Amino acid sequence: MRLRLFGDLHYSKNYLQLADFEAKRDIYFAKFFEKLFEVEADYYISLGDLTNTGDLCEWQGVYDLLRKHQAVDHFLLTVGNHDAYSLTKAQLEEFLAQPLYRAIEVDDYLLIFLDTSREKDFFDWSGYLDQDQLTWLENLLNNHRDKHLIVFGHHPLYNTTLFSNTEKASVVPQVGLKEILDQHLKPSLYLCGHVHADSIVHEGQWTYIQLAAVLDQPCVRELEISDGQVSISSYNLDETDRQKGTWLGANMAYFNLVDRGFQGLHNRNLEFDWEDIIY
Image 1 (cartoon, rainbow, N blue to C red):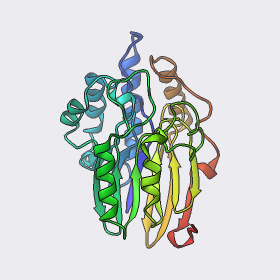
Image 2 (cartoon, one colour):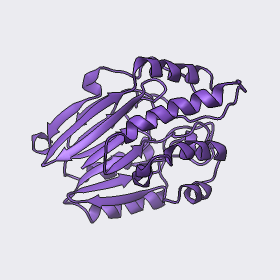
Image 3 (cartoon, rainbow, N blue to C red):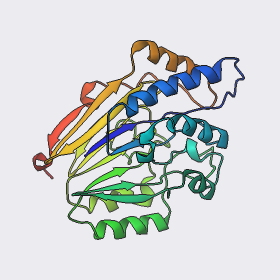
Image 4 (tube, rainbow, N blue to C red):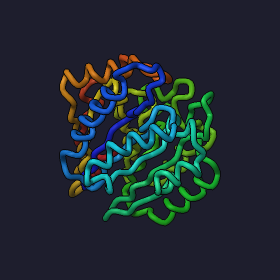
């Protein structure tokens, strides 16, 4: 199984009304999506904040670029806090034509897409899951104890990956998501974004993989699992394109470039065998 993923993209409207913003934005993201789709994969996955404010025109604009690729039929996403700033959850589901949380079974693996976003809340960008979703997740795990889980959520779990213990940087621990996931004993993966920094952490049976933001680090990650061997590798845009992303990020509202995205190759690339996990 091969998955190609990316972190927070932040496709944005031209809030600052710059004359050439839209053209530069669409050229940059078109180039990034070419990199994403250049290799055949089972699924192509956004880990949330695909848009910058979740405005309908941002959703339409980014999907216009995605639909230029035939493999868009295999594109899936988790909803980030920025994605949920403007539309209700019902409106998001209607536009995306896919449930905001779901599971897909692939051989020995269960891919779980969580919705960790709040609805139209500009002031609290921490992660949250309501009781309906938590109950759904508990039932799902109880019925798939023999599967390796690959869980996708925009927010990290508290105090797992880098910076996940800072204010509003994780799923709030009070909802008990980590405790639910820790009940699953098969070695598994949790992939996230949100804090705009690469990080890979092993803890018990779980490996946490956190991705930086695209405008800071224009990098596609490839997760491949075959015969119990797990590998994650990275494919970057070149320096010229990276600078174009920096220009975009510096000319956007509701977004800040950071200098912490790249945390060394050991937080970006990884190889291990499920059988080597000790817990």
